[in-house]
Image (cartoon, rainbow, N blue to C red; front, side):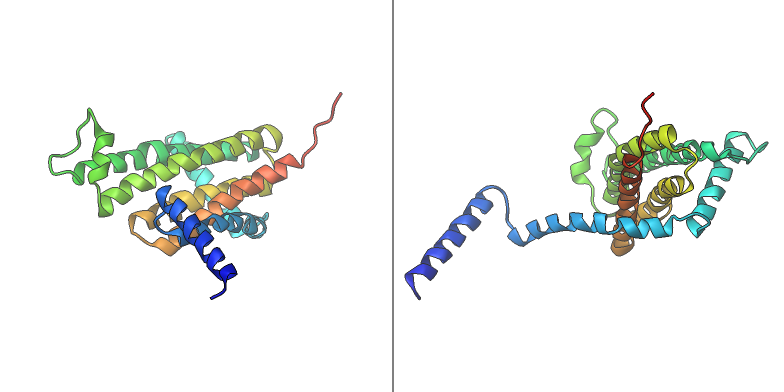
Length: 219
């Protein structure tokens, strides 16, 4: 082996050693950074899925009508075109903070022999495995994703509340997270969960990109 090859190998070993000292025990795992490009690549797909008169739009309208029906105690199921973002947000808020939050608490309770310690519940997360851990983790993913959706929804309500495609994209995010991602996480369906996460993330990126192209007239 030539001295040049020896030097390259030595540099590689030194680099891997530094990574290991910095907590990297599986260097190949760093390649997952490239997965971020998939979210951007999925943006055109979400545009096609969420186009006007699509199945997504029908599903969004059905969900919004259901929220209005429940919110009015059964007296009305009509939602104005500019009220659909609020209806979608209502569903997402309820699932994220109420239902999945309660499920997360149930996971902590069921995953600890002595039940949930209401004084230090987060300290008990380290004990969770299997279903209890998935209940906890699924809840926290919804919390992590809600900020991006909330910002996109607020901008959409201010700039384009009647844009069907924008509303459908927000709806695609909510539908993907609430009706696909969350159940898939609980049932440990990894592929379905990942696909739903990609679509949900790409849809809010798509909304932000569309709104960023809108100009505001200066008077």
